[in-house]
Length: 113
Image 1 (cartoon, one colour):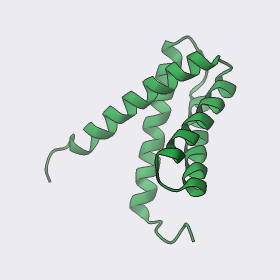
Image 2: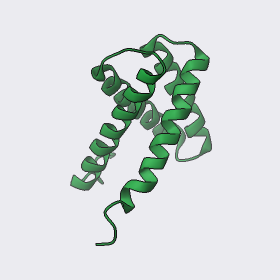
Image 3: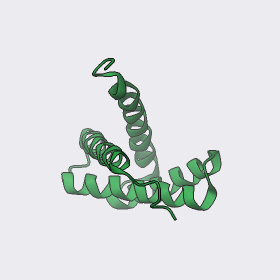
């Protein structure tokens, strides 16, 4: 079952990731002229998590699941924010770059313990 490995750390990591994704999605869409609420950014981040989760469950951990999940998230982003494919792609790439940078820097931000 999928919940066997669910512990407090997993939940905390998911919630922190969701918070970071929400803020990044909100800021990027705001800067690109999509004046929407933070609630919509939260919804978009949750949909992104669900889409990628389904892709990984159905296709396993690999490049194909990342591509399929990415395309599905582009479609969701396009629909949720009512933007064109190119703008959705630009938003997705910027969000991906920023979240990748944050996920690289965040674990090392407090220094060695």
